[in-house]
Image 1 (cartoon, rainbow, N blue to C red):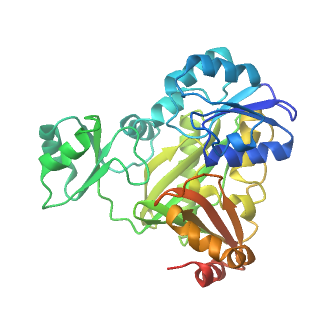
Image 2 (cartoon, one colour):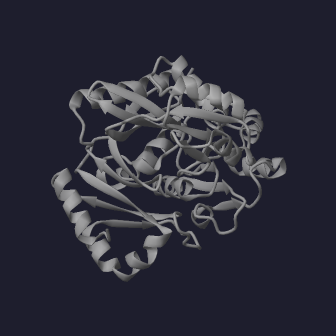
Image 3 (cartoon, one colour):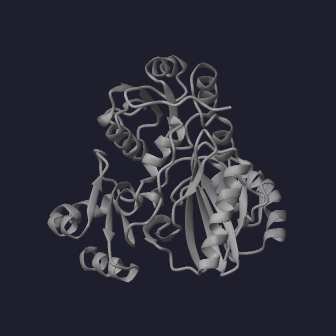
Length: 376
C-alpha cells in the first residue's frame, strides 16, 4: 500500500537534537519543510535551526505528545533514543521508520542476531552476563577479543580489549560497573574498515551511496575516503550486503552498515546504525544527493535522488582538541575544502565538533590537499 507523501510546508519532527538532526534539518529546510525537535539539552545543534524545540527527556511522554502536536511525520537522528517512547509515538502519529529496528539496533546482541537472520556474515560473538560466562565464551571466541556493553557504547566507550595477559575478572568488572548485559566479539584481523549507507523509502525504493573507507584514531572516526581503496568485487559484495539488510529489516529511512574487509572476498558486518552516519558526511558536497536529503525524501515518501559521486573526497572529523587549530587557520581550511561546525557550545577532547570535506581530481589528490592543511 502506498504511504502518504509529506510535502514541503509540512513539519518534520526529529527525536534527538545533535549534529545529525541539525544536518537533516538543514536539508529539510532547504526543501521547504518546517522542523520540530525533542531534545533535553538547551540550545542543542538541531534546536538552533528548528521552528519548534521541545526541551525535555526522551522518555517524557507529555513532551512526546507535545512534539507530536507539531509534526506531520516523525524521524529520529540516533539510535539511543528511548525505544519505548518511539513505540508510544508510533501509536499516535506517523513514524514511517517504526520502532522495531530502533529496538533491535539499540542492543548489540539483538542487532547481531538480526544480521545473522538476514543471512549476512557478522563477526563471531557470544552474549555474557558473568565472569564465568566470559571465561567460557573466550574458549569459543579466542584471544584477543573485545568485550562490549550491549547498550549505550559509542566511539570506543563501553568496551575492553581482552588480550593474553588480561585478567578476565578485571575485564568483566570494568564493564559490570555499568551493566552485566555484555557481548564478547572476536578480534577481526581486518585489512580495512568500510561503510555503506543504504536508504529505502516508504515505497520500497532503495539506493546506496559509494562505499567509504574509514580511518579511526582512538576508536573515533578520523577520516572517510571515497572511493574506498578496495577491489570492485569487494565493493559489490559490501553493497549487496547492505541491500540484503535493508530488505530483511523492512527498512524505511537510512541504515549505515559498518564492515570489516579481511580480503577481496571476505567481508563481515561489524555494526549497523538506523540513521544518517558520520562516515556519510562526505555526501553533502561530493554526491548529487546528500545522505540527509535522501533520508528526508525516504521518510516523506518522495522519489529518492541520485547517489552518484561527483568527485573523489576525503572527510575529516574536527574534534574538540582540533578546534583551536582549525579556528587559527580557518582561511586555509576554508580555502582547501568545506568546513562544517555543529553549533556545540563546549569543545571537549574527543567530542565531534564539526567536519571538513576536501574534494579532489582523485583520491590521492584529495588526500594530498588534506595533508597540506591538517595537523598530523
